[in-house]
Image (cartoon, rainbow, N blue to C red; front, side, top):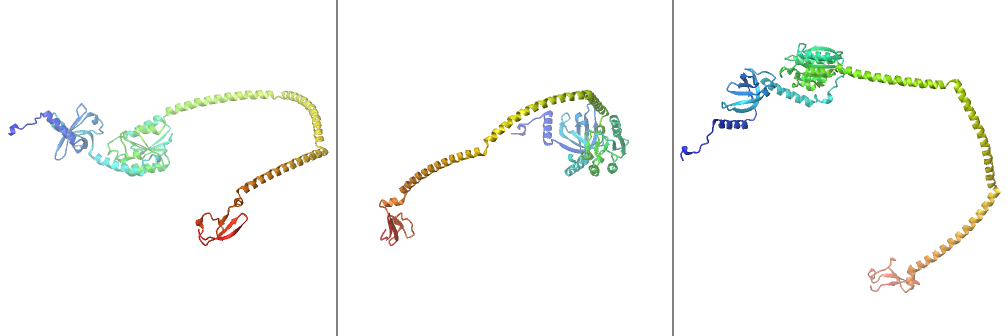
Length: 446
């Protein structure tokens, strides 16, 4: 068969593009690419289109609006970035492209790995354990704020603190919050503030920024200073999505500087409402106590009126008259009762006269002697009958009775009863017992 007759698979550009797209998505499901941005465009749709390149090649890419809206920086030409995404095919032009779902500055990748390594090591040491975190004072008298004095974060914190609880004293402890020298100054400022004994709580804070901007708060020495502080430390670094090592070590992490201020002090309005309720409760309690005191005073006045000397004398006279009547009645009752008791005692005394008691004992003795004699006779008769019965029983089972019937008993030389002929041998000496005696014998043959 010639080549012209070979069956051929024919694709349309659309079909071939889809086939290539499927192959790319299967082989490269998710990739990381590092390179330089160029041709960055962001139309009104909110999507970002770009080219990522290195010295030898370039790849077109896109990041759609939902993911692009989560970026914390604005991509521009010449920026060195790290991208994560899926390799696909732009079918309209037949070009493969990267559809990115994550973009970060290339330097942040190394910083992120360093951050995760330090976080894991400190967590293993127990610096993040909830058990070691100190409780915050419910109503701090003085707060030390370690931050940049010119930043927006400190203004937000002061504004919230003044609005919520103006009685709290605020000390701004100036310190750089980014840059090479920032970690050492932050650490020393924190150590001096904790050792001064002036503050009930210390706040570490700054506004948002990139990972590099917040890197001063990922310093290990600063983390250990927070852990060693005897004063509770609150960390509020960056925005809600930002996390630093200081956040994990601190006794409390706030999502934003303003949120930290709200957590540090109570709300005056809430306190006023609580005080109002307490005042109402106190007023109610005092009113009830006053009413109770008034009722008790009235009761005591009534008792005092009843305790006047004239009233007491009248009651005592009435009581004496009643007691006199009861005394006379008791005396009369006691006289009759004593006479009856004396008669009973005389009757009992006559009943216990020695002569009469002696006669009673003699009569009882004669009765007991008769009973004893009769009991002895009955006992002797029973024993005699029992003895005769035992003798008859013994005679019935006695071996001598068997011998009387013509039987004999043979004993060996040891005095044991012979029961079988096999127990003796010719020449053995034996004894034979009859009813009227015994005699020796020898065995001739068994």
